[in-house]
Image 1 (cartoon, rainbow, N blue to C red):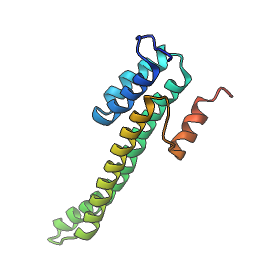
Image 2 (image 1 turned 135 degrees about the vertical axis):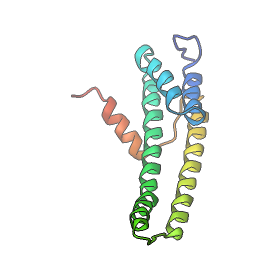
Image 3 (image 1 turned 60 degrees about the vertical axis):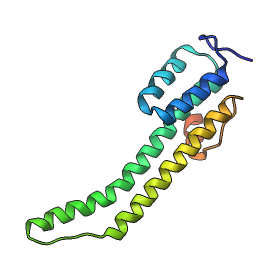
Image 4 (image 1 turned 90 degrees about the vertical axis):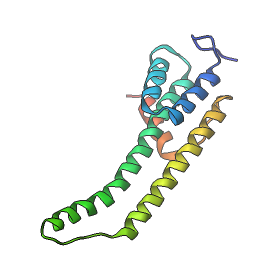
Length: 141
């Protein structure tokens, strides 16, 4: 079993990284991931650190983009409110809320699964993220 400079196994640090991503968010991932990228030498662990941040960013981006749709309707409603009008499509807002809830649920499942797989230095494939990590961490110039 390979050990990190901290004296714990590589799998345990990887699992901690993914669980911190789920429960703590960006600050924890930046601290642990930064440590891993700066001081650890295990390639799987480094890729896991980048993957954790990439998955976190992907879900945040998707939720932010979904949130733009009701925000756009609110802007239109505010402008029309100046002229005593209104614009509200509650149906679309409910759909966006449902999609956001589904995304957050999938994010939790993914991070919990990644954390559990990390104990054995495994992973769950996330095709888009994995290709970005491979491209970004390749040794070729």
